[in-house]
Image (cartoon, rainbow, N blue to C red; front, side, top):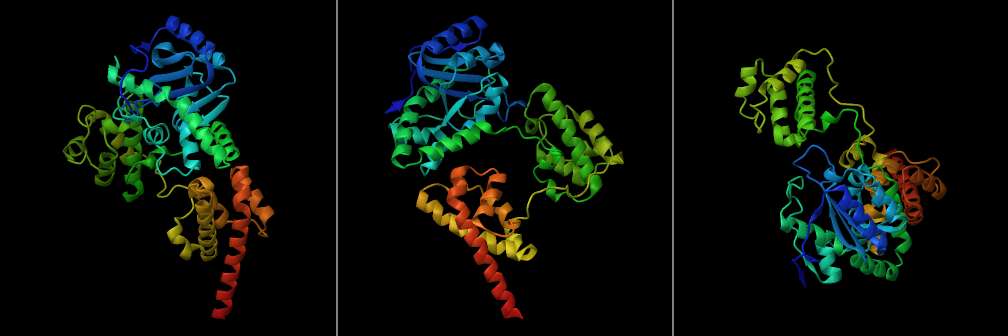
Length: 405
């Protein structure tokens, strides 16, 4: 079955407070959980705000809201009350929903549940087709949803996405029950709701793609100032930074250290749609980097662990612990039919392997996992395996030391 037409007649966007308040009452009068989705303009706009919010509830219908026009959605949030909200990949949408006053009290994440069920592909279109037998066209998923007016095919796409969520939720819940994974899913949903997905970095400019290829503190200072100038201007005009000047251009300029504005303009790698129209802005930033006494350190202090490939040299004992524990969890992953990264996040395993609790015991590992944010089901499933792997690793290291002596 192919769904490629409007689900309920003509589709229109609700973009006035009066229309919005009327829709709130209709949704309040509906029944069952709420299907909800949001569309942003990632890659086009600086902000990650929602430019369209879709809501479906049985007995009420499908509603498409224009968040910039409506503003605050607290009335809708209050009308929904304590019912379950259904989202697909909630981690992508919770932040922009919360920004407008929509904060689910209970969550069912169909994408996360599909992972826990071990489905090979978990995109909405794939899961809908596999479980409901309906093909969803996904050609508008990367569109610029800040466009006004929104084209009708985009609205059809958006409406169908959310209209199918309750049926998909029911089909997935049945599979969770059959696999005895309902409790696991509930813990994962609760953990998702508890997370703050906003990322705050002390030196965000160090996220420049290619920054690690820059040598010299003066070069890094130029990169920092160009990045900051681009970010400030992108925020001001609400355009994705990379659409103004690509990361590669900033890195090229930082490496070249142009001595004049003409040198910067002549740098062929310094491209992008605003690379010439805002040349004065970029040159002023480059000058700040070339003259500042506030030079950045070459490598920022971080709690990031070395990559596992370097552990055998930097920390051989940790390397043994990680390899044995990782193998044990991989076996558990196969047994549970849950992806390894959902059984226990790789970063959690690396951190506990790098600096394990002393002395190693199941109880100590349980405590360490809890401190690192592991869920109760993950702790119960993995703590014994990890503690045994760590003990085995220490014995391997001791035996190797005896053989060397």
